[in-house]
Image (cartoon, rainbow, N blue to C red):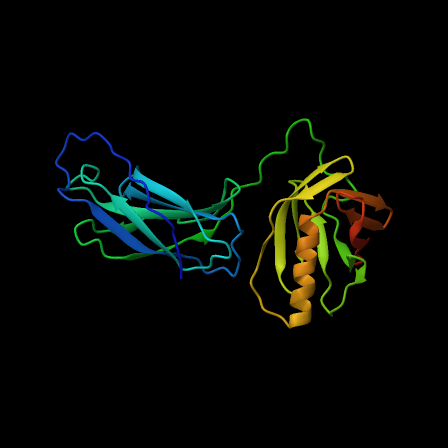
Length: 253
């Protein structure tokens, strides 16, 4: 089980009503049902809120360990003087990457501050919409938008396997497709012939070793892309030195 590292910070607030006399340590786990791997920069935030209006009371965040998986354990220290008596509380959680929420709890999970019984918070895949591209940047080239491309080579080696590797870019700069075993998505940045991608998130299906190795090579190549070259039904994605890393052709119906 992955665990948050270090002490979580607690906020102090001014009170005018009776409060708990002692500090409270809340513990539990955060999990989700979707088979999606967490990015390497994933961060967990847990927040104590009032149940009536989901008003934040105290919260803290910490970055998860690389290759963290759910369930994720958490500890939230609530200092005396923060929680009011006679008020019902709950916990919310969210997992974010690159400053954008990927998973979030839709409703607070009730928590008893007197017993501090561990709780399970289930978050759902509900990503924030991609950031609007800067107004100075053009929209993705029309020949790329919503066009599906089939990957033919990775690092100069022909693609193998019965499941096609695919790539497409939507008008909101969201790149997605199949990596041969798992589906993936990443945020693309395109300006003229320059192209790059943010960290890719992928489902967590297991396939035979050869396909998994090819998938890792494809996602690693995608992370190293710096430019593109388009020629009719052919597309080449290159690294910073101009070396083609991924070759693609326009998919046919």
